[in-house]
Structures are given as C-alpha cells and as structure tokens.
Image (cartoon, rainbow, N blue to C red):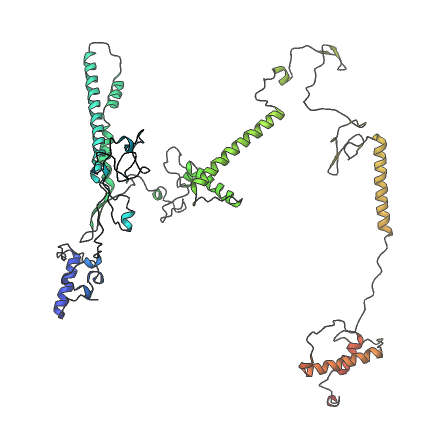
Length: 537
C-alpha cells in the first residue's frame, strides 16, 4: 500500500528519487528525517517505511512500526516503600490489635508480637502504611527489575572504592614502616640477602605487572558497527583467543596427520604423537575427554542409562540433580559392599599381610643344626629336618586306598591310582579290581565286535518299475482288464472336464501315482495328429 500523500511523479522525478536513495545508502547524502527529527535508516525496505493509507501520513515516519496504541492506564510508577500517611493517638476500631495500624489486620502484621497489644495498652500506635495499586500489563507483572532504582548501585561502588582506598593506605603505611626500620638498622649487622628484601617488597607492593596486563587486555578487540543510520553504532566484540598461540591445524602440516574438522574446530587425535610430551601444549581433544571431570560425567551418563534400562525413572537431561544424587548413592553402596566382602574374606581366610613375619629359617629352610648321615643316607647324629606342611590335610587315605583322589587320569576323568577307579569315595579293590576292570573291558570289546560281525544285512526292497510317461511298454507287461476299464472311464471324464471348465470341481485332488493301466488308457485315448483315422475316433 502506498501513502496517501504520494502524488504522481514524472520519470525524471522518479529517477532523481532513486539516485537520492542510492546516495543515502552509500552514505554520500544525509539520511531522511521523520516527524520527530530522527534519522531513518535508508536500508529499511519501502514496504516497511511506507505507512498505510488510512493513517494519512504527510511526512515519512516510522511511527506506524512502533506501538502507537498506548494504554492510558499503564504507568511506570512503583510502590513508595516505607511511606506513612497518618499516625493515630489512640486505638481505632478495626485496626491491627498488635500495632494499631488500620492498613492491615493482626494476622498480616509485620511487627514483633507485643506482650500487650496496642488494642489493650493504647500506646505506641503504629502509623498507617501508604497503599497503592497499579494496573500493570503482562510484561510489567513479570519484570524482575520493575521498581529497581539504579541509584542504589552507587552504594556498592562506594563500598568497593572505600575498600581499595583502605588497602592502598595500609600498603603505604607498611612501606613507610619498612623504610624506617631499614634506616634504623643501617649501622647494625644485617645478614639478610638482597633477594629476601626484594621478596618482602614485592609482597607489600601492588602487583603492577598484573595491572599492566589488565590494561593490555584490549589487544584482541574487534570493532563492529551495529544499529546506526549507516549500518549500526560502534560496538566492541572481544576475541578470547591469544594471537601468539599457534593454531592446532598448523602444528603438523602433513596431510596424513590428525584430522581437523573446521566446522566444530575439533582435532581428536594428537597432531604430534612422536614429540616430547613435556614440550607440547596440545595433545588432541581425546586427552581431555578421558581425564578430569569429563570422565566423571561420562560415568554418570552410563550409570543413568543403565539405571533407566533396569526400571529406574531417571533421565540425565530431564532431572540431572536426581541422576547425580542416585549415582553418588550407588557409589557409596558399592564401596560399602566392597569393604564388606573384603572383611568377610579376611575373617574366613585371615590376612597374611597383617600377621607377624615368619622367621628366616622357616622361609628358606636353613638352620645351624648339624645333622650327620651314613653312606646309606641314614641319620647318625642329629635330628631329621621336618618337612613343611600346609594348613590343609595331606596324605589322608580313606576306604582302604593307598593313594589320594586325583592321582590317576584317564579319558578326561580323575581317579585313584591304586585301583584305577573313577568313582570318588569308592572302596579300594587293589590289584584284583584292576584285573577285573580290564577283563570287563576286554569282554565288552569282544561283544561289540561279535555283534557287528553277526548283524544281519537289511533285505533289499524291490523297486516297483512302472510304465512312466514317455517310456516304452515292456514286453512282459500284464494288464488287469478291470483296472484298465476304470482307467479308460477316468480318461473320458477328464476329457469332458477339459472341454467344459464349468464342470471342474472347486477342490481338485491330485494323484501322483500313475499305474500301468492309467498309462495304457492315456496311450489309447491320445490323439495322434499323424494318424489318418484320427477323425473317426
């Protein structure tokens, strides 16, 4: 829609208007002013800058883009906090029984409960508060800064300035005191080195180097123009990367080195895996993923997934505090269970680490005792060395056995070597049992061999040779006339069904067995096209 004030323009006027607009966009001509004298951005398109016809705009303006229907009842005023309007001399009916104010009841009173209220004492009547009501819009009711006085922040600034001033004053006093002590002790023997003096002075002085660094922090500022008539007001955007650092994609220029993703600015692998780890400052993003709080966060995610699969109503993104608390409880219970299992094992088997150390003689089997043997190995002088025994029972033979269980192995089974039995806790039969077992095994082998030799071969089944399709009729074939007659009838019925499809039944049963009579009936009813008498059949 065009504005109502726009009149007809000639071609020359229209060309001049376009040239003026281009000059304004290029910044060569001053920007157009609206009714209030404010500049209009020349880059605003025409459909936004032109007002509707029903507003009857005489001059270019952007009022139609602003909120021009303002609420007359809306106000930016706020409550006058702490204001009092009237203070009575005696108690009034309907006032607060505690303080005596008429603007609230006893239940809403904010004063300390008196031992004897104003209703009965009729003294110290509190003044009435100033009650105001404002009609706020949707945003005004939810504005957290509504009613905030920015002048109150001056108190915070004053407090910090006073603290800095006191600190500077204290440091100056300490420096003066240090200089006085130094002048008084010039004639005395001072063995303190110059380095210690410098350290003390550095502790008292303000760290000027840090102040200089803070002043130089603006080296990475980038100037941008936003929201001005020509394209925006000058703003400052801070770039946090230090320009002296080498970019990680320039650490190794080899094409086959670690891959750098420019979209996410990530390089997971180490670009210099062969260099000294003490000298390189960057070792890939994977190093940070498997260390510090990243590993703890990964374990927390895994625990949340596993708990959700097992039926726990927990979600890492929906309720992170609940998931973290559940993970901490799980770790505490796990540690308690671990110590409980450890204590149970120690109670049952003992703790060899906490026991007293065994003597060297028992550990190495050496002693200073003298033992003398003869040629046969018998002891002549001294006592025979006792063999060390474990806490488990050894060489205990049961059920007349002379060896222990597990001294015999055969066919993937354990047994006793004395009788070669594979059944545990069985009674030992000695050499007689071994002979009986061998005889039984030989007898079993002989029976199996005799059975295999005398096993009857299955009688061969005679195959029933039928006259199949396309085969020649054998000479010794004998046909049953009765069956042949039935087969001819079936063949006639089949021919009739082929001629008339409507007579074919819904459920057709197929018989794959073809007898010699069926084959003979097929040959007899078959039409031979080379037969000159085929038309008379």
